[in-house]
Length: 71
Image (cartoon, rainbow, N blue to C red; front, side):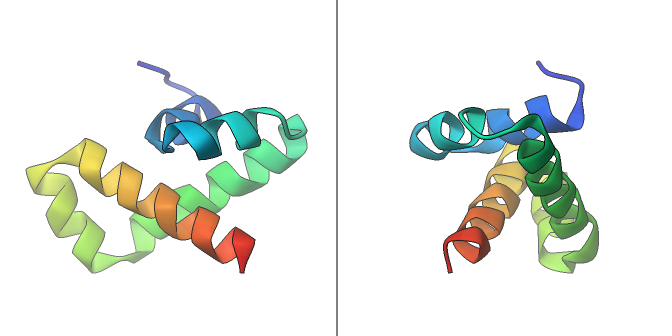
C-alpha cells in the first residue's frame, strides 16, 4: 500500500484515470493529490463513509477530484 499522497491518490483512482494521471507531470500529480486530500478532509459524508470503508471514501474523493478536473 502506497504511503505517499500521490501513491495513495493513484491507488484510489479507477484504472483508466490512474493511467491518465500517471502520464502527467509529477507537479500535476501532486496538485491533484492535494485536492484529493482536501476533499477527504472537508466532506463530512466522506468521514462517515471512511469509518465504514476507508477505500470507498478514498475512491469517492478521487472520483470527485477527477470529475471537477474534467469539467
